[in-house]
Image 1 (cartoon, rainbow, N blue to C red):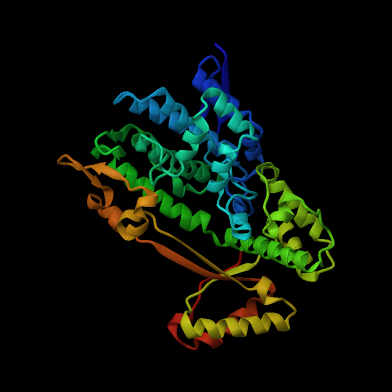
Image 2 (image 1 turned 30 degrees about the vertical axis):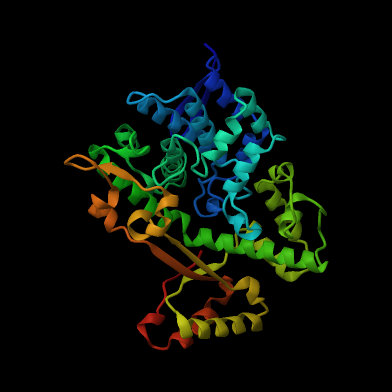
Length: 439
């Protein structure tokens, strides 16, 4: 029996049977150029500058998500009939959910102002792509069905929830995978118990968790909370992103003014930098290596700001990141003083003084009802019977409040001047004290 086997660091062996039509579909999608491109897009963007083991790609993660979806569908099929059409769409959607990611995953989206899910839909629906052709050959309606999973118009709805929700196969894979590859153990939770506790509420067309799985889901939500705080929002990772964003922003400014020496006119990257339209094929030509190539070329630019920022990025000379506790007038005073100090030292504050704001809500249902529908709530079986939204049952979830992080990123050479500006702006008040750390 012909098998396609993938050795995976998280799931061990992911096997596909070439003689089974649905598995053959997945194999053909994996072999598409658009999916192979994900080998060249880092799963965690610039996290490898902080966690040296975080070199894994969107390709490996997407395979893992498809594998979990296959397992979940197998387990749920023991409870209810799931049509072959729904299974094919679910597995294809879970495999292709990240096919629209740009270079270095999320970080470049800030500069180019796009969302990867929009590109995923476009790639799936555009008949110029290999992915679209494979899906259509299996079922003419499959591209539209697969794309509909991302905006939750697919029926049955519980299939969409397994692709995108607050308890989906995507999160279940990336928490464990990113924890494994970074070496940070915050993302570990009892995956097997979560999978075996999943059920379908057929009346309301939604996924829920049996009562026995409550603690495992609490652990899963806590894992997500700590991975964001300790890994995804790590100060060195965020400072690396600040350097890259500043470099690309400076390059765009020079490009608009005609002051950029190294250019590849009409290249997809340059089109996107100036807000131009790119075709699906042009977008798909971009990956991490393109941005790195430009950074290396721009190290030789005559513009001192761009060349310095690119050198810092390529050689990992990151900004220092300091947590801010200032607000209102004190923050305004600090920014005025800090900008003046950087200007005096020869640093353009527009590119060398970056406020980094980040935040997360571990679970939307309880603390952010307005966003709960988009995040798709988690439902659990109550001990006495019936199904309830998890925060109605779990004190742990009710206690998991959202948080915000605010930092200032700047060249390490300016540490003394920034410390002075902080002291002057905050006076002797306790609120002026900061938690400073070098990236």
